[in-house]
Length: 162
Image 1 (cartoon, rainbow, N blue to C red):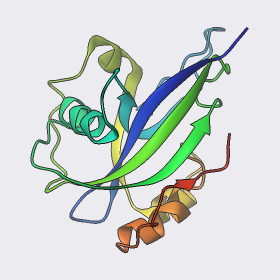
Image 2: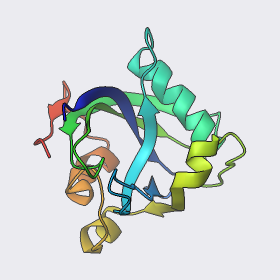
Image 3: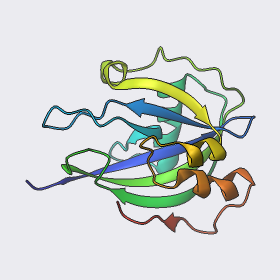
Image 4: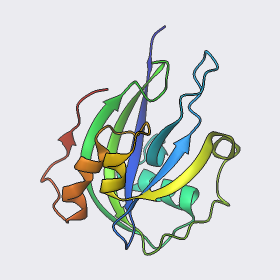
C-alpha cells in the first residue's frame, strides 16, 4: 500500500510554567489495534495556509486559547510511525507558541477529536524524559530544553525520520 503525505503543523505550546501541552490519541491502525501516543497541538495544513495560519487555527480549535503569541518555526520532521500502520507520512513543521494560561476549553473540538483524544496533559521536559509513554516527536524532552530557554535555531532543524 502506497503511503500518502500529510502536510501538517505541530505547535510547541508553552505555558507560563514552562510546560508543553500534549494530547494522547487512541491511534488505531487499520488492523483495529490501538497504539496510543502523545503528540503536540496541531493538525493538517489546509491548501493555501501558511504555517502560522495553521498553527493559529489549531491552537484555537484544540485549546480554546485565543491570546497566544506565536514564535518561530524550529523543527521539520517526517514521521510514518505515528499512524501506526505506515499509511500516512506526516510532513510536519514545528512552531513555538506561548500560552498565557494552562486553562483549556475543548468546546471547539471536532467529533473526530472527541473520539480519538483520550487524555490531555501539560508536560515538563523532565517528565517527558522519564516517561515510558509513546511520545512524538521522539526525544521531545531533550529537544525542548533550548526552546524553553529561549534559544531558537536560526533556521528549522530537521529531525531524524521515524
